[in-house]
Image: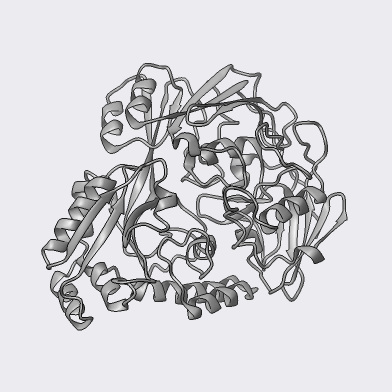
Length: 511
């Protein structure tokens, strides 16, 4: 496929996904006319302590993502509708059977001056798919498991051919997942990252500070700021820092912090709707949630409106147990589950679980979590269900939540729906918080990848949504806005939904 020739700015380019029948093409991206460096930009994110990382293969926390995306680029990333858009490729197309994808790389250079090559792509994939000897697993290994690495090859320096063990016309979506940004061939040490991204690494102290400097040779245009600092901080520290002008930008504000800052003439608050996805996760492989009727009862027991009104202080919208509202492949025609305690009690009686008791494991990792846990325990008592609330450490919560508790609470940022299915719901998914394992669901996931037609693929994904809506382990109870704030004088502040390319992206900011 011949690349198109017009120069496309980043903002215009990311306005929508490109591609017909699984093929992508994009012309060379260029600078949008960034001016001379404007000094240092200080940003603050919710910290995760010593578990923070700058290894692009293993980071999954929002603060990890905020750092890594400035050092590295992916072959594809997602726009705010969670559609795959090309980044380090200029075109990509499958063969007629969906078993071979050929991708052409753009002309980009590593921070050490070496050119990006097809061997870098193959090395990155071998790191993800090879023997897992690292202290932490690679989260993309499952979603990319169909890549037949031994039979994939570098056609030439800038062309890579990826062969698959089973057909997939949706490979670009899988290549947007966490952990898929491209690393240089042969890299073993990630303490001093060498990427292709808009900033060059300078220093990193987990739980405290990351510093990077402007990459004047960045393929998509040099950043407008000379030095980027990303600091780890709790909610109160972030609020105080932006009010005192010690931070230029702060992320993930609570509703009360947002209200406080709205009256500050020196600060602008931005709210991006439909950005946080809150859920309860029931472990479906063991009592009491191994029984579908018990899970169905929980979906009816939860009073979502009360949770939003009380736990979230009214800042959010009731969800309907379907992941990905507003994103590609969302099943918007499935009816919302209504709060129906009488029906919930009847389902528990039918399941022989009238004396139901379980542990709800939670930690203060996000606004409203503890309040929601105690509130749902009270809602459960109203139908005779005993819920023991156990509070864990925020620093280790999402690792421990994979095994602890019969039910947990979590928050997801927006994700491409195929990635959500592949990373959290197929039987061997690495982030399977519900321990969901359903052969029919797994077969449908494979069948969806085989479909060249987006419409046919959407119909299969809809069937998968129907299964989860009926008897799945997730209760998606609310969506929330994502609040950020920046001091006046900051221009082009990022406003995309979390996990999208434009979220937490500072290379076009001036300050």
